[in-house]
Length: 531
Image: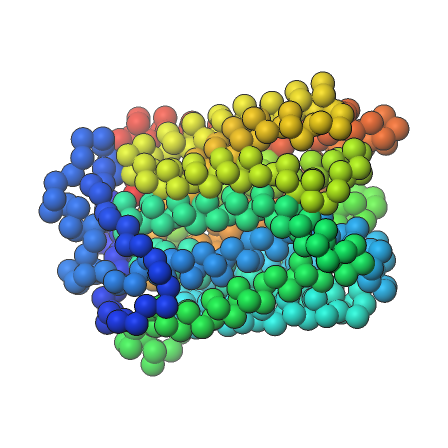
């Protein structure tokens, strides 16, 4: 195992598979250009060819770019559903019987809890049982749950369907990062993660716009149903194409028995739920007693670590704790956690301030996020291509740009909170989007750079757990300051929103500090993170 880990520049490559002659996806083959993992001086042609070979010196999967499109479709609808529902909450409250404030809150928090619960076990299942199988099950279950959401006759059914959606999303998402890890290597892997990062940024930012369009088109009373129905054709097409283009598990793995570590899964699940619950329910659950669950989460986490050490001596644990001894991985997970704590709350409080404070329609409030989505999409693609050259220095630049953009948003809101606020936000949101694109996808690439392919699912799940925990903590912290400021200022959004976003700014600043420290330590030790 140690020999597999020694050279992060040469991670495990894609398996060789038979070439499919019938093309169902029109995907353009992206050429591989010379990669420079540890310097900017370039690499010779032989080095470039090594980046493209399979683990046994064979050619990589010829359908890998088509497979990437399918992965992005599946991952995209899950990520879109995180933000698209925000603008539909008012429509759900008015148009669905039994949609009490508590039920509406659980439509959001239930999804987040279920999603976080299955990320690491889902990744482990994919590593052990086949990523295509888990991907198809995840997309299929998510599509069925979306249909149930759309046809829900009351609030209780909608909450249950959202819980199933979250579980399906938690099963599906780690397969996406694991398949990218499996199918690509070298600079191609950076490009693929760049496209995935673009999907993350665009889906998160564009969700409110898509939701607003659907509600405007189909009416306030039932428009929210189409927020869920939009997943159905995408999910169906994704499942059909996944059977065609995603690689099946190797024959040597199909008959092999794996340990699924049920005790470890239960302890990890308890830790995740206990940590997330007080934050996702921070507005509905009054008092500070809820934060005792954080103490319980720490206890469960300690028990989980002790159990994994014991279980790993003779069997396969759900998480290889040795991953955290790699600086690139442990720092990347931590950076993702604090960055998403600052990134995610932005659109939560901004959309609320535009709709409730300035009486923007769902469509107009959603359109405000377009500059961020454009900047994030372009920068993620570029960042994926150049991360092998600049390493975590690229993330430092990205977080600086996010800080500048967020600072601009705060200044604009404090000084120009009026009906034309959306136009004033175009430039700072564009800058923040560019910075986010240079942060998310390069961090994903570098965090997984030393992770063996066979552990890609569980490792990717851990990154996503960090992001989800960060998002929950960030929304709770930003929301708490935001609502407190609103209460003390008698509903003055021009005061409440800048204060809330100031907390988000602090989280992004923490991510910047982590990136700077890693760059400085890497230079001092001569171990800068590389692809």
